[in-house]
Image 1 (cartoon, helix red, strand yellow):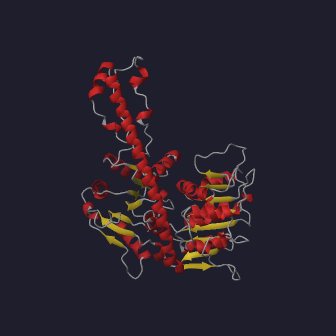
Image 2 (tube, rainbow, N blue to C red):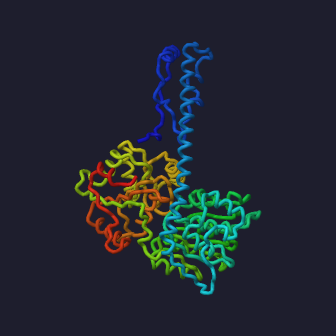
Image 3 (cartoon, one colour):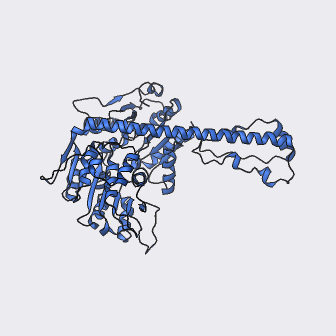
Length: 525
C-alpha cells in the first residue's frame, strides 16, 4: 500500500566537512524518489536545505556541489515525469468514465424505460417524453453545457422528467430511478432553467440534501459545469462551517445545503424564501422519511410560496414515503420504478461471508482481505462512529493507507478526507451511512458492509443497503459488494434484504468461503 500520508523524517545537520565528503560519494537518498502529483510534499527543487540557508557564504568545493546539483535536478525531472504520467492517467480515466456513463445510460434506457411508471395529476396534459435535448427548447448556454458534460441524449428518467420539470406553468415532481441514471443532472437543469442572473442577486433556487458531502458534490460535479456559460451566477453552500455575518444579505441566486443549516438561515432571514422559484429535495426518501429529516423538510416547505416548484428525487421511495410526499407536495406528477428488483444494479456482484469461525473474527478477516488482495478504491460501511474508528485504527496499525469519515469529524477534515479519496490519495474509506447516499467516486470497485444495515429498531434497512452497494458499479463498471456476518441476527437481516429485492426465489447474494485468498477468484474488481 502507498504511504503518501507519512511526514518526511528530519536528520541532524552535518558539519561542512562531513557534507563535502558525503556529497562526492553518496548515492541519491531514497526520499528523493519521484513524488506523485496528488501529494502536497514540497519538491526538492523548491526547498532550501539548512546548509544553504545557515552556513557561511563560502561556496562549496566544485567537486561536491556539482554532483549534489545533478542529484536535485535529476530528482526534479523524475518528479515532473511522474506528475505528467499521473495527469495523463487521470485524464484517460475521466474520458473512460464519460464513455462508460454514456453506454450505461443507454443500457438503462433499454432495460428500465419500460419499467418507469408515470402518474400525471393533470389527466388532460399532453406532455410526453423527450428523446433529445434539442426538443426541450433549452437556451443555448444550457444546451452547450449539457453536451460539454458528455450527455448526448436524455436518460430514461430524464426523458420523462425534463418535459415536466421545464413545463410552463411549472409542475411539481416526485422522481425515482437507479443510482447513476442522471437524476442530479435533471433537477440541476431544472433549477438553472428557472434562474434569472440578476444583480444584486436574489435567491431563486434551493437544493437540500442529507449530507455536506452530497451538497458539495452537487455543486462541484453538476451545477458548476452546467452553469459554465452563465456569467455572473452566484451559488452559496449552506453547510456546517459556512457563516454569513449578521445583518448581511445573502448574495446568491442558488443555495445548496443541508437541512439544519438551511432551516437556521431561514429562521434568521438570511434566505428570503419568498423569492425561491424551485425547491429540490435530493435523496428525498431520507429527507421526508420518519427516521430522516422530515421535521426540517416540512419547516422549509412551509416557508415557500404556493407557486414554488417542488422536485423530489431519490433512488428509493418506499410506498409510505411516497404517500407522505404526495401530501406534502401539491399535485405532484410521479415517475416511479414499478419493481424494487429493477433498482439493484446487475453489474454488482453481491457476496456474504460467515466470519464466526474465522480466527480473529470479522475484524481480522477484513484486515486480511487488504493484506492479501490488490484492490483499487473501496468503501467499508459500519454501523457506528465507534466501529468506524476501531476499523480505521486496525487497518492503519496494519500499515494500510485508509481514511475515516463520520459525523463526529470536524467539517474541514471531512472535506479534505473526501477530496483525498476522490483524488486517489487514499484507497480505503471507512464510513458510516453518512456516505451511503448519492456520493459518487468513479473508481470504487469494492463495497464492504462490515455491519449489515439495520434501522433503529434492529430491522432490515432495505433502502440503506441499496444505497450502500450503489457506491460501486458506477456507470456500467463492474463492482463487488461483500457482506460480513458474525452473528445469527445479521444472517436473518441479510436474508430479509435478499427476499425484498429478489423475485421468484432467485439467489441475489451468494455465499463465499471465509478465505481471503480465494476471494480473488470470485470478486469483480
